[in-house]
Amino acid sequence: MMKLGIIGTGLIGGSIALDLRNLNVTSRVLGMDQNSENLKDALTLGIIDEIADLKTMCEQCDLVIVAIPVSASLEILKLCLDDLSPTGTLMDVGSTKGKIWESIQGHPRRKSLVLTHPMAGTEYSGPSAAHRGLFLGKAAVICNEQENEENSLSKIRFMYETLGMRLISMNANDHDLHVAYVSHLSHISSFLLANTVLAKERDEKKIFDLASGGFESTVRLAKSSPEMWAPIFEQNQVPITRALGDYIELLKEFHTQLSKGNFDYLKNKMQQANEIRRVLSQIQMTKASATPPREVRK
Amino acid sequence: MMKLGIIGTGLIGGSIALDLRNLNVTSRVLGMDQNSENLKDALTLGIIDEIADLKTMCEQCDLVIVAIPVSASLEILKLCLDDLSPTGTLMDVGSTKGKIWESIQGHPRRKSLVLTHPMAGTEYSGPSAAHRGLFLGKAAVICNEQENEENSLSKIRFMYETLGMRLISMNANDHDLHVAYVSHLSHISSFLLANTVLAKERDEKKIFDLASGGFESTVRLAKSSPEMWAPIFEQNQVPITRALGDYIELLKEFHTQLSKGNFDYLKNKMQQANEIRRVLSQIQMTKASATPPREVRK
Image (tube, rainbow over all chains, first blue to last red; front, top):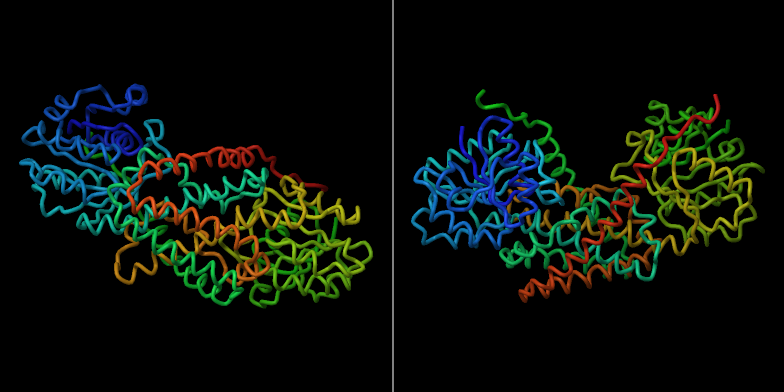
């Protein structure tokens, strides 16, 4: 059983630790968090067994997982690589990959850092949001894996498969472009939809009285953490600018045709959008067919 | 127990019929639908007891519910009022109210039409989407109720309360403005988010491989029926144009600041958006505290 280190004991780091312990993949979890309240909570909630400093964690652990805002990862990953044990593996789980990839290019231990992105975020954060089974049936992206040493790569593949995830291999730049469209843009649309209606609330005090399931669904992501998302927008600025630009163009055209009363155009655009049923049923099917994770050893 | 007529045996009409029968409010349900497949399904699924023509239904039923696209309602409601029995009540459940209100102003029986909007749509439609309990804990708007005769108004209030809904009274124009922001805009944001990523799929074949819960949540409404939504956009053109214009302005400013690299601005906007937590927890609490409907008579 491996010794695990978690830097950032929030939703993702905490949920991985809970699952790996429950599945007998890890016997001992060391934790680090710059927020001391979170660290205490992580101990209380049984996410980690002990608090450790970075050097101790990296020297002692078979696997160190960095699950913190991507701006902080840029600094910490290099420090971790400096102290990583000869057979140790470092993994990041952030929502952007290109900048992090560039930042470790000069490092002699760079082959031990596996760049991953488990597609399993929610709008909640912190240790109390962590829970078992978060990853089941979802996608885990591994980027630029041809650059990794075999030991580290197989350790990470084994770990994600044990969590019940399906692995996707792609290069870091493709990843960043894809998530700009299928994740980051959804967050922006949701944040600003919330702001649009909140601004209207100043004149129309009771505007939320009629809000129901549809509204709830589209603004759910507006609850997400600005501390996590501002660095993502910074590191993925170019692809997100493009995705948001595309979205605004379509909205502006829809707006123009709406104000002109061209309802056939609107209907046609909605019919096109209905094509998303194919995508959503695919997501549902993949989830439904996932095999629950099994204990690895007794 | 009252005799019920349902024009449009889809999600809303069908679900009302199923609940009212189950709660012993109605003993017999007459149905009408311009789609003969739907009508057959409604019979098979036990939503209606018999198929009826408009005249028979309006002459015989204590309550006739019109649950069809709002463009069709403009025509049918007047025909129903023409044939409505002296003690009969007519109710519409459409997503817009102003145009329908105007359209019946000259009619001698207009006080028997109660304008309502149960805020309980989903992205599914047709009789097979109908189910019991759809309305529990949600809001039912009644518009311009001061214009209704007491008999009809109390029948409708009783009916919605029996379904477990909370009643909101407001005028038709306020309703149309409010739903433009908290419902119609959500649908547009979702339709065009779907189109943005579907367009990108032409170059990036695998772009949906990374789509997960967040994407699913924000594009769910893009599955909605264009046949239902085009008439809503038509009848509520002015308020929706305004709401969409507000949304686009916020998105454009976000886009500008993103491309300039002003990440403090972005963070500030996300912090503002987090305020939506108050609204969403209110929706959740209201749902959780709703009392399940009870049978009215044995």
